[in-house]
Image 1 (tube, rainbow, N blue to C red):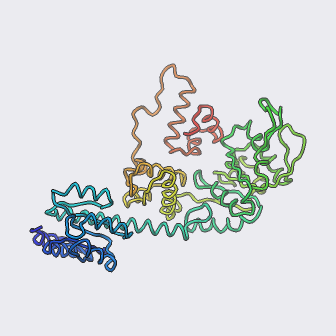
Image 2: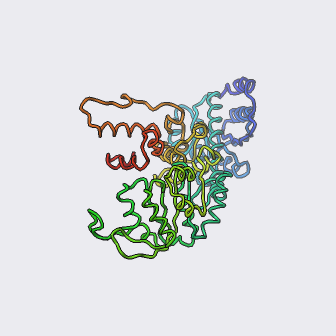
Image 3: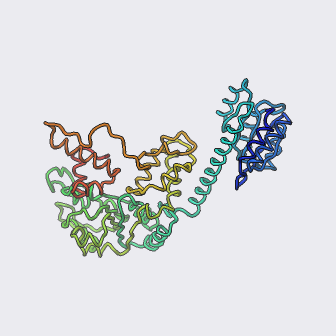
Length: 472
């Protein structure tokens, strides 16, 4: 480190001090090297102090409270590896950078496995040191943002199962708070993936019915011939294949909550029967002759605009008015981007637990990608992206390479024509390929896929079931 003073002068002539200072502790037993390194780090805008060995460094950590420790590896009394372990035992919130001679590189690598950030060999490459310090500062800033988000998520960012502190979500929370204690019907609208079922579950959890069942059914995912049986149940012999009595969703949800998703896909005849149950609080199983009483709160959802659905005949007006006691219109994710960071942290917490990972957060370049994307699949798409990134990232942060290329506007790579057709191919196989391709294009958004294909959402679900593509 004999050339450190000259190199310091060259670096300080071209380097502007940073606006926000981090505290750096220099630990080096060579006095000249220690002074030169301290001056260099200060010239870069850091607040720096020094210590002659690990023992003195431990004393200074409690009073100086450094964010970064730059330590020589070989020192008397307490060496760099011993200092690193002692800092970890104390729970010190520091990032350690080690300095080592060529003969002790193996020990430095061992120290990195023990938790050191990186190491530099002597004589020190000053430019490399500056680059590493800048990276550590960026890492510290990200970690602080993550801690702030966790605190915000814990203290302000949730309401039941819902996450977000935007003005749009606070309005939703207010209506949920008013509606939850009642037994009134609720109609939730919003684009696919905005979290309609989460609102329904939150209403249930915050209601006096919370200890009773919450039953959810997607009206678009069940063939029309079976939907009525799913909702009301049937008696033995009510239709071909009805081998025994079967309870429907109303019976299963008795004293609790029934969530009917995509209610606009329900046939007009079934809508009439649903209206009668809402009015009379009684129903009859298919093939049955006995009226049964039921105490169920119904929450319905649609990805259509309810007024437009009534005008187009997708939703009966009398059923709409009966359900529309309380109503919610969930905003798309692109309209509440300020909630993005909270949602990401919530999903990271969820998938860290599920996958035994410890991803701290998302680095700044990856966060910019997430913020600039339009999220056509809304919160559901974001959740899938974060789940994938959590699995791919080794930690501590999700980086751009862990995110799908489509988020950066890059078209997905294709190794074959858009739709590969060949003479002799069955119509069913051609249809399968077209549906898969369309779902890929819409990033799994089935509503948009159905619109592109010119079919109803229910027809698309039926085709997915028939073609055994349920997970597409």
